[in-house]
Image 1 (cartoon, one colour):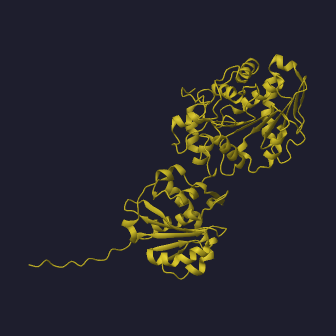
Image 2: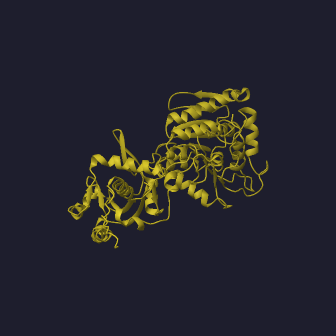
Length: 476
């Protein structure tokens, strides 16, 4: 096992009101009970229990909602099982409800908890019934306390009054329907807890992102009832940064090792690795462009020295609410420099200014994609000198070509915020063995298409011929 240990304390967390002791946190009681009856806790799990179960001066629980973000395979499921069993066996919860994106996932956690309880002689004596029927799984104790499970749907939990609600992989909630149904089950219980555990998500993880942002804003607020603990790598870190890996993986050196993480880095796409292993939010899980390579290629510069080589790319968003014009030119070292020339919020605005821009820039070529939304400008573009129509059959090639060239760090750019935002949000739309750019969430990718066209033309057009020089004989 690796000697590299994960960080016990999360990188981001809600600050306690006072020193945490057995008098100010139920976490110490929970830790002692769990390690007596279930299993030895990892250091980060002990930290979580002590901080998440903080008490207010009146002896009630400080937090009603617990938001925990942590990379995969670090022991969060075991902690959820332990928390559930502690609460129902000690009488702190009459009903615990576990919910996940599917009933199969919720059943895995429930089955593991039942096995833990049945493996302990003292706990086994308190079990009245274990109901295994599909869709009706229930662990019932002699005291009447129960642990049930459900899939996270818009009807989940209705009619129940819950003391502990466990939500696994909150990042999979793509709308508020399941949260709206499940979160209301705890309203009537004065000491109820909603414990949401998740890896980082993407832009479509609307519930997780909203709850995390709210908790982060209240991280120092003594009145907050929401607890945040986030084990994550800092934004923008290198994929192989060991310190960043430690911050996202508190189970490192205990239940996972650094070699397995390095192995994942070699096979996972960067966006997948960042969210699964580094617990970083990404714009899209199936990101089309290597964001680390894009960031590394930021370079404040201009196209002044290569104006005679400039090619333009133009594209329009599917909703016709955005148009982008990008310039690119091949440099002497084989790299391409690109920059946004103009962006418009409608095709009408673009039509009004486009002719003047093209006449002023005098590009060697203008690439556009008439098979897509840019066809709205067909009447304005066709017939212009230097116009290059990129056929639908070639769109995948220029998209994949841009991605490869960016990954090789051969596309220099000036960190234009519009273009960077679109690069971050671009994901892959597969067709056969290839793919093209798409955007699954809100936003546009017309700028990325325009960039692809401009870079493609800059790389493939022949270099301009130099005018022959007239050499006159030297006067004698």
